[in-house]
Amino acid sequence: MSDIDLDSYYEALGVKTPEEILKDWERTSPPRKFGDNSEEIQYNGYVRNQLAEKLVALYLKDLGSILKKTYIAQKKSHVALVQRFEEEVFNTCPFHSDVTPSDALLCDRIRDAAKPKLQCYPGRSEWKKWKNAIECINLKKTILFCVDLEAYERDTNIVTEIGITIYDPRENFDHSVLPLTRSFHFCVEEAYDLRNGRFVDDAKDNFIFDDSQILPLDEVVELVQNLIDKYLIPHNRAEHSWKRALVGHGISGDISWLESLDIRLPNNVQTLDTQKLFENMYGRQSSLKRLLNLCRIPHSYLHNAGNDSYYTLQLLLSMCDIGTRIKLDLDNWHHVRRLEENLYCVEQLEKQGKRKRNRGNNFSQR
Image 1 (cartoon, helix red, strand yellow):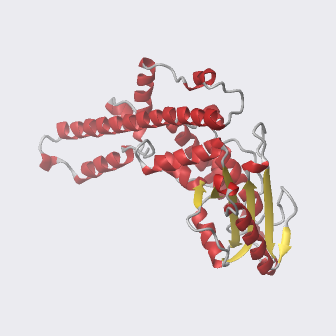
Image 2 (tube, one colour; image 1 turned 45 degrees about the vertical axis):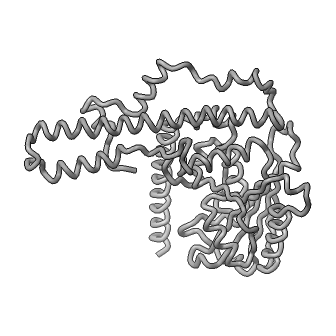
Image 3 (cartoon, helix red, strand yellow; image 1 turned 90 degrees about the vertical axis):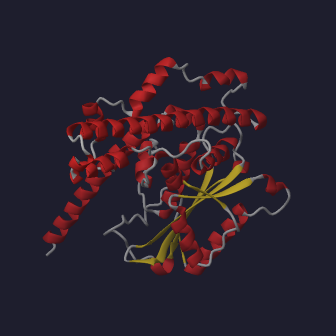
């Protein structure tokens, strides 16, 4: 986060913030009508085929318009703030040579801090990724294979756990209220006694969605490979009608670990990365825990690979589900940024408290 208090500069210079500009536009614009389209497409809690496609297309058009307006408001506010600040500086120092280095540096910092942070709107590559993710989730034509790996904190080349959660639309009824998923938690027997806890929480024994399987590494590799081959590779003509996606939070690291174990993924497999998706739309990287809190998803025992794979999949479904996005106001860019930043501050305070407790425990053991 920037160390510049932009709000104080907006107020002192009499410049409207991006949110104030958006509110002005909303007063003179017709209200959002996305919900009114329900009658047009005969939406009744679940839709299929062409009706689902129309619903998603209407929402994406609406969301694209909202994000574009948000970007324009940020840009307009940025230009106005920088111009107003420069006017104040030059009114005080009528000659360029009178401008102090500190004033010039402050102007550069304000310019950088106030520049538009939103880079996800129609025409951008970030928008294409979000559009694809929203279509994948809401059209229910994509098999989602979520994977999470845990490594030993003192030697991250040693994989200790692999978690997998699978959402297969072929195994779900169209009218299902809750998605049916399969979750697996594999613990590597040779590394079972290697415990985290100093830098990363140790939750190896706390898989809450089924029984953990403690197996030799070669058996874990074989089982994971079998699941990948079953769900991520089509085996006949009918299976080619279903899309497939590898899901994760910071998925590139998990892919690297899988490759280090000689676990093969299909060529050009589609990836849906909740960390990258959030960053693409909201301009910040965020932890799995913060995003679960942001989307109001109850959770416990994170850093267990099986649990993390389950929660990451639930997070993807929540972030991309049209109804959830509207209910949680996830289309409101500034609301989400403010909430995520507040959650970040809470998370940092929790980490500080944990470090103090650990130091106290270490001191008492001496």
